[in-house]
Amino acid sequence: MPFIQVRIHKSDEPEKYISGINKTLDILGRTNAAISRSILNPKIFIAFTRYESFEEQQKQYNENIKTDMSLIGSFQQIRTGFFVRENTNDKDGKILKNSNYAVINSMTVKMGHIDKVRALGSLHFEKYGKDNASKGIGMWQHRQIIGEPMNRLIYVTSYPDMKSAEDFLTQDFSKRDQQIANELSIFSDNIDAFNARGLFEIIRHQS
Image (tube, rainbow, N blue to C red; front, side):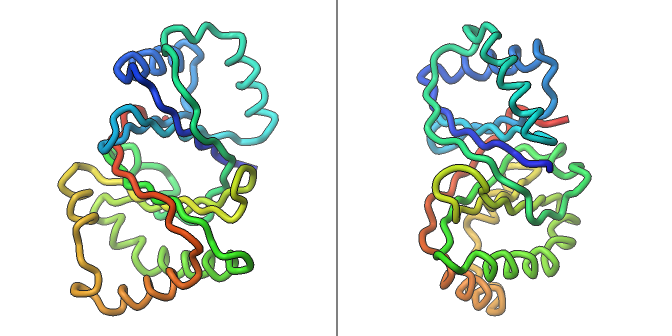
């Protein structure tokens, strides 16, 4: 069962972290990790690591603890969890490979409403996924299966450049498209909390 592990890291030596984690992943021959750096707080990083199974995850974990990580320097792991991908408009990964920025949204769903939110998400991807793909915009919806809280979703959109990300973040859906505004209102009614939204620069891609 393919899944991803999401890790949020904080480093007081961000440039050392970037250089060190890239070198360490290259030494280990890892091609399944993507790293993004927060634009708001450049000391914050999010690592997305793709695994085909928990057996593979444990094998790589055991390799990690035997590896000299001094190149990365000291850092704090703020949060981690395992997620499954539920929706995307980029199944072959081509859009992501050409993306340089990502907007990452984290939210918790009201208890008992997860199926409704997943269905709304699927409709959203069916309706807007193809058009966004034609603009080089990737979309992903991930549901947490291990970690806290269990009713957590991550929604990611990726962009080829900063201008595209900026246009997305500053658009007013209520003025541009009333239907989108109505859909977002229905979606929001089923959300317990919008935990965070961040703009990130992608500094390492999965291959």
